[in-house]
Figure 1 (cartoon, rainbow, N blue to C red):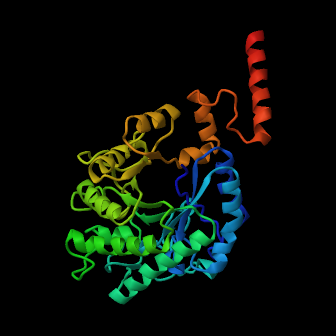
Figure 2: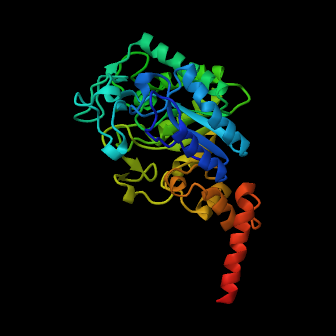
Length: 368
């Protein structure tokens, strides 16, 4: 599967030619499921000014050519719906991912951010407005409306983004949630917002179509959200109709911190993250919560991915940076694993030529 991959390239939240080209490449490349990037349920829920949205019918309509093509290639179009919360109003990563300021103008003018409490992500970031209960109920309805629009746009899998320090995760984590009302305090209170969104989205999303939920299985700091908490949440999500828990990690405050396991030490840079470092999260959620799980995080080799599935550590494997590097990774994996010796899984427009390429390569090898 293709993980949600933010492109920071939309105007007014609208999908355009870039998004069609970007997502269609993965469908041609043999991915089974192609996710959109985190798609905002309201305008202030965008991460950056260039993030996709689905808070209007026009935005939903713009996705239809994309979902039609993905489906025509035999893949399943999927959407992740999200709200950036207190991590909104920032620049794209190639500009540092830092908060927008008063020096940014036009469509890059910063907007007020929201969260469970008036606690910023880090020094120099906006202090969020603490949502009141009426505002929380409005946001729950926004997620449900986004689910209905996603179905009308042709998506066949939906994922609720509850990870990486964005709005839902910030309610879950005691690091960001300092409330003392029904939406804070103990674990049940901190889970309330996530579970209310799940109930509303499940009611709005067709019963026969899968619903995923992405979690940050751990925050990293010991006082934060833990893998034990994730197992409890996953059980509650499964009881409410979530079909797959997508297990990522980190992102709650400052620079992201991750753990290689529930007892491992924090990992602070990409170089510290070994292949499959988050697979233990998916494995434990699958085993102890009785729900299907998806593994993500430095999964780069076909044999590595196959082993994760064969060993029962996860039900699905999703790729991000690796599939951006090679959009045809699934077809190359099928070849490497001996599943497609005749290149029959390739689009017919490519397959005949790829067969000939292999023949020519064999001829050259024989001559040498």
